[in-house]
Image 1: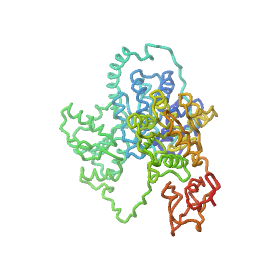
Image 2: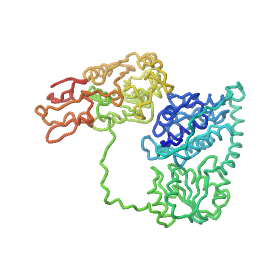
Image 3: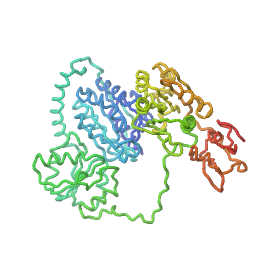
Image 4: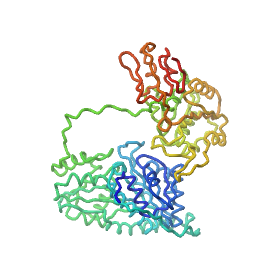
Length: 603
């Protein structure tokens, strides 16, 4: 039967077709829909989980692969940093079943901190990487990745980028999936226990194996040569190949070389494909990885080829490629009209500027505002983290001074405390991020006698990536109701002496509590607990009494709620977005805003 699915859905269905036995991961755009798709299709015999972080996910999957099972791990490119410790080791140890790690790269970056290229990790860890160009291809290629993993007893990286992950395509799939039969774990400490001597021996085997894999991949069906035998050639990888193919659809005389497996580099294929080529341009997203491999190849074999790309400024280093950008690059390089370069958009209206903001009624806005009001007149530093609450940096809240990586806010606040003793140091972390990477920082704070306030913004979900469950929600991806891990008890168990749980919409209580914590020494924690408005939306709306509104705009200036605007000299509330949270009712100096849903009714 045929299904119209997202690229991430195609990866999920391809894994089911490959007989996957275990799927684990941590949500992160653009990868999150893979596990969610598996959960929506029949998956009898498949263990499915959102792990607490990517390191845990890979370690769970590695044990499954040691047992002969097929295991899939999913994450975004930043998550691969978290998983890098077990990844490097399992690359040396190897596997018995298939182990495929999907690391979805985010050129742009659209929803990440840095742009990061997973292909570099493949080279670093010395394991194969597959680079699909479309959703249809991802469906088939993920199955090949499992086959190569088992054939060569190695973990394999799978690197879709955003436009592959979020594209849609019709995929022909079987009506029923069957998980693979496997032997189970067989004890053998000489194979599965990593000691220096074993690592030394396996490193040599791994390098010899990669030569064999490279020869195998030189005949891989997705490493292709199309078009004529021109002296100028285009080399492309991933979705950039799809763009190049589109631009060259009317130029069959141009040689188009596609590299689908960047590591181990398919040298024999590349040498054959480059026969007769005098000059080429390399199109790839993020780093010039394939371009560098071609330069090495040309040097090693003394090929007289001029290689163009990112390294000589002919292709941009940063951001996504697109069919329009590719068309402009190819027009300059080949001197041809691709039909996509120089498209006239002069009559297109400018898009409205829509900076990302916290949703109307978001409890994080109330939490930030309470801390801000409590710290008026005092020197304070506010360390943010990765999640919806990063948007607390926007004006008028301006409550995020730093944001580095997941969990870093808690530890960075400690660094500020130890070097800025005259400031009150806060960290803000979400409930999901607390479980993923925040707890270590808490232990570090207690052990090293930091004077800091940890604010856990608990909205009972993993909101930014699509409302996935986590250990604090009481349910898992197997559909089971499980014991809820209580954040307050975890903090107390780690030695935090003062732990408060507050409703952020009870503004006066929150302000008082923050001030009390700021006046005490040691590690303190405030859990601002209120559900995300996307999963629990009140029915009551706030309303404006125009007779009482004096047009001072204090409500707008103080919290920046997108439901508030100004028209005709009065504040206006958008009933379509207002959730009646009541925060603005606490701010209005004339009692012009009324709400029965939280806060004070000043009508």
